[in-house]
Image (cartoon, rainbow, N blue to C red; front, side, top):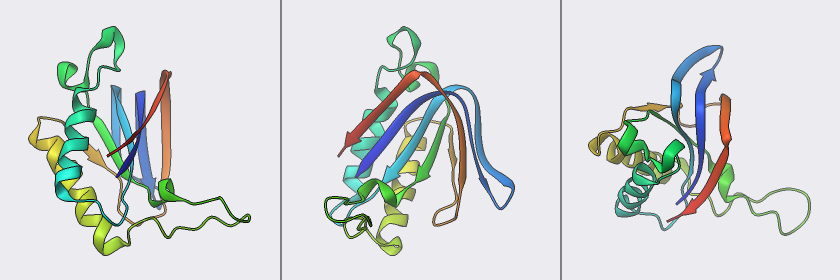
Length: 141
């Protein structure tokens, strides 16, 4: 499982002209990729790590601040570009595997106390954000 975590002052995701998820105010935008051998346990572990990462202002965590989270599934995080000019997506888990793990990740954050907004799995999404810092981290579970 791979996550790109960005500290944001605001973020939203739109599908077909409709805002389906948004956070306003300091929080985190998480782009989440799932690979073939990921598990629900890995989703829980990664969620707990992100929730307690001290990357908000004053070395505070989202947990400390009860900061909102916008979580978006993004299979392209597992692109392989080593050969040629066309990325291979073979390392990304297919939808029937990755969607339940994305849901498990979001549910784990909610169980920890996070307010989680979501993108729409498998949709063509337009993501808008204001990166605060900028702070962007890549985490692998």
